[in-house]
Image (cartoon, rainbow over the protein chains, first blue to last red):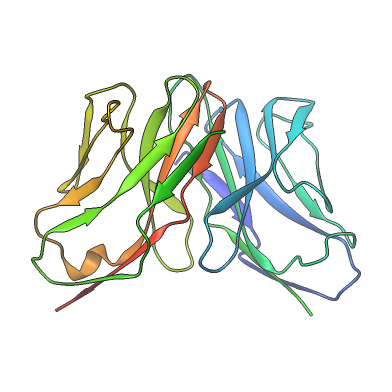
Length: 112
Length: 111
């Protein structure tokens, strides 16, 4: 089955530690996105990538980093510079023009 | 700038009631419009979409019409079920590249 997989579903980290969230897709999609969702709020774009080895900052990129070494993979690192990292993180992918984004199941990160 | 404004929630309805969730947008250009649904603890799933003015998207009894003159894409369903309880997001896609999402509207349907 084609899809987009995020892992892990739940992640706990101590304050000050970097943590990497995984996002893999086997849909052969060109574009991939990372969003952050906080309770009662919409989705805010962290980073997006339209092709391999290229990515752009979104609205809230500070304290985050990404890489796109393979078409299928777009990992997100939450660094210690991110002041309030506890949130629900969503990865998405899409391809073509005027097409919808497909979302993963999300990773809930809790920093203690 | 580009943005999406959704009706504030939460919305609580009785089963079989009529649902409307308002969505208006501001965009430079000609966006595609989407409604997504999110169940607790999960990612977003596409509910329906429309790519040009006057298009009507429909799925699972939900409908929305792309109204360019009023810059709106209101979601409607004639008879809601308990299983429709979720958070609904309106979104626009501009230049085939970046999405703009509304803040979401929480719907609870009671038996």
